[in-house]
Amino acid sequence: MKFLLISTTLFFMAITLLWSGSGFAAGTQYNMRVDGLACPFCAYGIEKKFIKTEGVDSVDIDLQKGLVIVKTHEGKTFKEEKLKEIINDSGFTMKSVTEKNL
Image 1 (cartoon, rainbow, N blue to C red):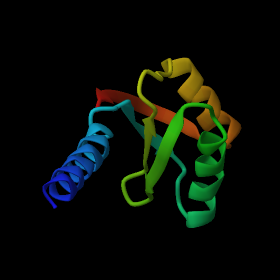
Image 2: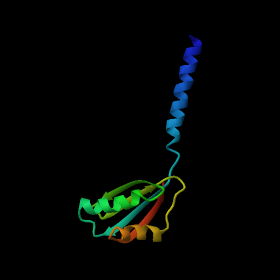
Image 3: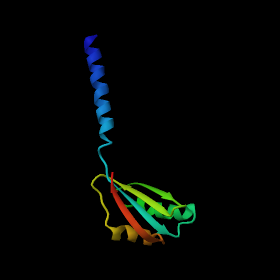
Image 4: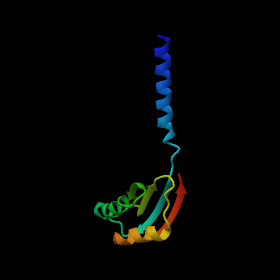
């Protein structure tokens, strides 16, 4: 009985550590101001380009603010020129970009 209690406790501790450890793996967030974002179809084109890019975790788009938010895998960074290229290939113009480590 004591063995079962200890085993169960260790199992749940291990699961908790593994689950919480994923919070330590953080990448980079890029906030890009983009001209011409007017509809969900426009946003989908940009989202599709970024999702196909290696190292991208997520893409969020705020149409009202003209903002594209891209989060990357841990250790993955992009130069501003690469971000501009992806936005330009989508048919839009990047006005500015800010970078934040997560």
